[in-house]
Amino acid sequence: MSVSIREALVARFRRPAAAPAADPEPATEPSQTETASQSETPSQSETEATSPPAGRVRRIAGRALTTGAIVLIFAALILPNVLSRFHKPGTYFRLPIEGFLAIGLLLLLPGRWKRIVAGVLGAGLGLLTVEKALDIGFYKVLARPFDPVLDWELFGDARNFVRESAGKGAEIGALIGVIVLAVAVVALVTLAALRIAKVTARHRQATARTALAGTAAWVVCLMLGVQLFNNIPVAARSSALYAWDRAHSVKRGLNDEKNFAREVKVDAFAATAPDQLLTGLRGKDVMITFVESYGRSAVEDPALNPGTVEVLDEGSATLAKAGFVAKSGWLGSPTSGGGSWLAHSTLLSGVWINNQKRYRNLMASERLTLTSLFKKAGFDTMSVMPGATRAFPEANFYGYNRVFDSRNTGYVGPKFTWAPQPDQYTLSWFEKNVRGPAHAPMFVEMPLVSSHTPWAPLPTFIDWNDVGDGAVYHQIKADAKKPGAVWKDPNKVKREYSRSIQYTLTTVISYLEKFADENTVMVVLGDHQPAPIVVGDGASRDVPITIVAKDKKVLDRVADWNWTDGLKPAHDAPVWPMNQFRDRFLTTFGPGTGDVSRALSPPRR
Image 1 (cartoon, one colour):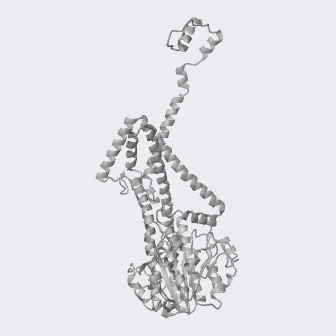
Image 2: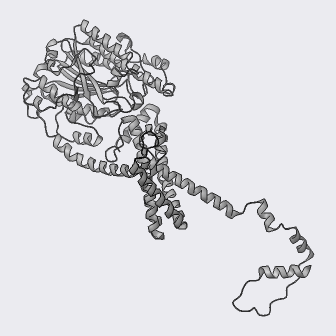
Image 3: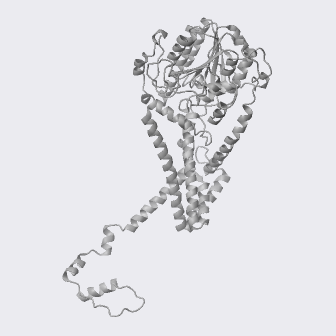
């Protein structure tokens, strides 16, 4: 027994040598203890039966990683940039040609270059995935895709909105979350691409067959126009086309600067003498009053207009009874869902301002605005900005003599989420402290903010005598609905949006009835439509606009605008691009029509 064990041990541990070993030491017999230990050690077959070997675990883990990498790359390639596509089955039954072509490219490359190219392709796809995610957010808020050249500055405004609505902690948390998520997406997609490159190198033949078969199937589906669900083609090339479109959007953004430089110099009123400006409004107080997020849908969408139409119809009757005349139409806004300052600058400058780059360039130009032209004509120009919480350096460009904002209007009440103060307080303070006392004819731009998202909590309209310094709003806010209760249900969001519009319109109508006189001329308009969560995808960018005056001679001048009588524009009332309003207004209220009216494009109906 001992001899056989000794021979087995010698055979097991003997190492092959290049030359015969000399004088090997004689093997010693194992002790009784060793023999017993060996007899108790389980055999290899027994070990394999009781616990899986490490190699098998590694194989399972490797296959799981490879499967995960393939799924991640596939998901990144077919990911839509519009949220509504996620609910369509056809989105997921697609063959992305980019994946098959990338695999073919990796098969042709030598080892080191294979990893480099895979890393570059993975990082590029990760960045495209991040940009698609940005598109989804921009479509839901601004009803347009993210512009990789012009929209970076909007992230600062988004941070300000989060801070002012939810506090500094929420701002920091949101910023960290967005950065971590973006970095994680790029890193994971890059690692997935490297994993696939590694598998490609190990299984060249199987990978080549897969790439060829997939490409052939894609070509057949493309030629036959195969669509399984929702009229979405099976042959997908969405990521390639998306990357192409993004590259061209960069080019368009760069070219737009040259176009803007030409547009901003075209000004029919740049050389107009002061005594030839706004002769039809001399001695008047002219107010341009923006109602936040007041769009066509608030007037015409059956899901939103109950209550709003009644406010407009009853308001028209109330103002007519008080001796006012009103006419209404539509303007096409350059923005939707947000970016109010783009609409303000478009209306006042007469130049189409639909992105931040154009806005910055406008502020650096010498373009005359409605404000500066009123100033040139001898009016006292001012802005009343209840939503502003810090200095407004653009005031010099616009031509304001004075700027009033939430810091110098004496409000002691609470904020209503984003809105620093209610619209009724703003108008009450303005009447008591600016317009009420003896004053020179004035031009006022006033963007009201109570209908700004998130539409909760909302103030309520109260007696003007009770407004005071705003302290009364503490209890009103305490009794109002909270954002968390509203935003759980899209129908509640729509309902509260409508209520916010009704509140501001009620406030403006009541202000006119109570405080306006023969010298008051007010232009009331929306700045943009609300976000798609309220109006849905594909809503127009039209906003209502109304001009109200007690002096009928003022409204006689706008008879050829063909606007609708009253506060509610008819569905087929003319629609002008918002940038045309400045020149039409100046022409209508100047000494003559001149040539500018012929230069304007016809209204849209």
